Length: 438
Length: 168
Image (cartoon, rainbow over all chains, first blue to last red; front, top):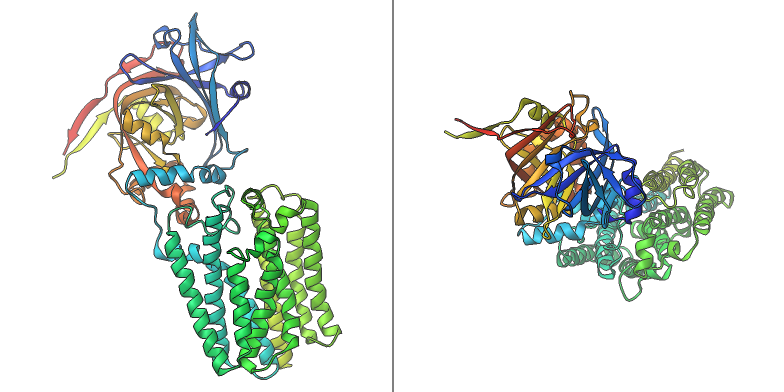
């Protein structure tokens, strides 16, 4: 329910076939009775005729609500909207004249239900607190949300690629690879959790009223599902797991891994958290490209083979760029809240046309690197199958400009962008495995 | 042995409550002003029931302060082709704030599902909008019923007082 200008409320009210007039009767109960419109001058509503005994006394404060739904058999209904207004009643000849003084309303075509609900989160939490209750979900869904588990593909792909390159070189080892994956997962989940804490502290997630499953953070802190303290402890625990595994790998495989681990932890922690706050400085994308590309792939290769490989660095660049593009596109619906809280991502800094062009250039670069690898003799020819992921990048790019200002319409675009990263990465892994076998 | 109270309303009103996708619940705010909310009404044979997410809790607070409410069944579109009448039920409302907002409203799901089958899909995905599924139930005990046959409110309504039956 948002405030409406009275003239606008009257204009809207006239599009409804009837309203429900309410007033408080002498017995203290509200009376609410439906009435149709009668022609009225500007700034006024005339409703009726109503049975004389149903009319309020002159000067009584009345409310009138005009509401609409469209039944959808087998589903329920849609097209929810209403206009609500109040003012003193003037009664004459069975008609009720109203010059509204205040008005509110909601139209889900203008404010989608999920945004409407999000705008009321503060009210909901206050109510629950007063009621002595707190919201909760099952442990599974709480962990699922708090850690943003589905985004783990961003870690699984580069670690798998590092393993595939090692396999192509005849040096794969399941045990070391599994430890790399475990360390990567723990670090990634820790990053996700600490980023939520940082976004809660900066206010950017709370200011975001159009979150989607792909953007706007996990919101477990905003919804009161998990306390900030629990999130901090969880992040610390996950970082500790990553650090311990990293130390084991460094001590048993290669001390150079300490550099990979240190850089990874700084980039991950500093993505949104202070003092670096890379994403606030418009550096989020290169940080993600580095962390979820060369750092993970070359680090995995190093841990498995005990040797550094420039090929693994090169092969991971498309994966890193496409991963950065996930963040890039997912920040589009967040940009108003980000701007309001001084989280100056590239999306906040750039106009829409440049953002869209930036996507095309970066995605184009990722797939150009896939093509150039075999031509330059860096990667096997079979890695060219990685180009298959370009189809989803095109599906992301094409509607991007048109849906730029519609957060919920961007959801399939964001999804297709994630699939572009996933498919490209899996095909590059497959390319290396095929090359190893043939 | 449990005692279940049944309340007799005019059959036309029961039928409106059975099919209505939307009713206007009018409450009285702290300034004595009527405020109406479009909500799905349910009838369990004793009370008119609504459920409200804590996100939209203002009505719950108004009712807690002043339980006198009315329920208007007025929109022919929302009555889905049932022979059309209009009705208003005045009554005393109670917010079941003593119940767990996480699960207590689920007892209304069979009635809710009958009117809005899509609710099952949303309930399955409640993790996506968790505060929407923290809800309290509003129970309205009918005190007086106004019925306009054929929906013509320019005519005086038939007014009745609900009869309370006790069934063991």
